[in-house]
Image (tube, rainbow, N blue to C red):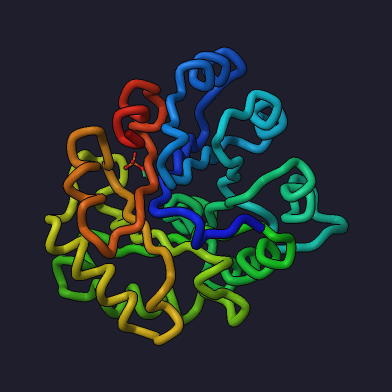
Length: 241
Ligand code: PGA
């Protein structure tokens, strides 16, 4: 497992259901990671491209976007944490709102996935966040608390797990919370449970080259989970710069 304490910040590209060999070749050849900084860059690609990315690897860490909650057996179509470890995966997103919404993933399933990942030396990036309706009804804190209580396993700690705060209404919409709202949510998570105080917590939701700087200047924001803007190598290079 990689040592999270070694890094100052984390920039995680979530390519979702995008990419191709041609896209990857262009992306990796233009990717510009400053070796003199302690920034950790991870690319979470569709499973089928992980091996190709591994071969092309250039100072970034391989990430997946999901994994099975099962260890192995008769589960057609699944990919286990052990298999992800075998191809060199260091990080894996779990509980992304798209998985919760379109694939009916519950906190219980997300927790099982995080357990499997930790057992296999992969850092789960556990996503939590509220809908716009929940935000408007002042339910953000309740939602975050419930998601954290139910989806973060006992075995999680500051060294083996990252939390991603991703307000659902900010994902892919071009909308972002104010800097104060981001800071408050991160502060709330840290205070919720003594154990979370030293966790790395990253922000996700419409991060781009313009807003990434002010967001990452908030001292309790440890980086970003980047969807749409991670598909544009110029944007992504500017974000990680
Ligand atoms: P976005 O996606 O940057 O396109 O909003 C973020 C995410 O879904 O992780």
